[in-house]
Image 1 (spheres, rainbow, N blue to C red):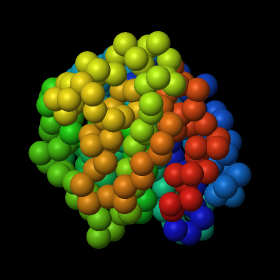
Image 2 (cartoon, rainbow, N blue to C red):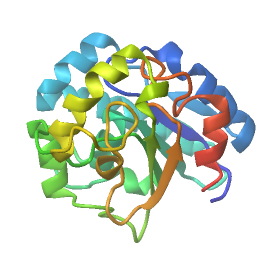
Image 3 (cartoon, helix red, strand yellow):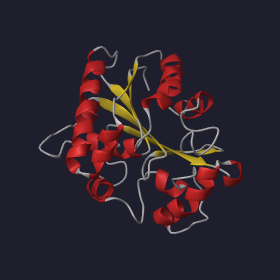
Length: 226
């Protein structure tokens, strides 16, 4: 993929500071501007409602438009962590959502999804909506989709991950002993039709293990696929 600016949408309730090392390493690797979409904890709490998704996607669109204007390709690369990856799938669509038409595929030709729970037995209503409306890599003819899954040994994980993982895995795949990043099973994170990347020893976030998708050395591993 040609060098171009990068837009990052983080995950549910994760502080912006957590993404600073990722953004810095991506800027070094791509040689292009990297912007994190500003999302507060209140913004994330409102995502139980469709209008809460629209509030965040409005910001994604503005950041993408700003960066695309000075992009050498006229486009950007999108990176979504956890819930952010699912929301960016919806951003690519040109069908109406909450009175808006985003059509992000006109601005972005690459989408990297880090530990995003694409499928789950107990998915939220809005996540189910995305899967019904845009199954798999729906715009693969125009956008390169890359899904990244961590495969973490729970013995090396934090106490929080060891406590949450069995229930989280069971709610996603029905198997409490599944493989995953401490929160999202590998099978749930790999979107059908995308380029799959499985990273041994990588946790969902810093609260789940010492090395996660945003750790600079891990960023190099999944960015290299592009």
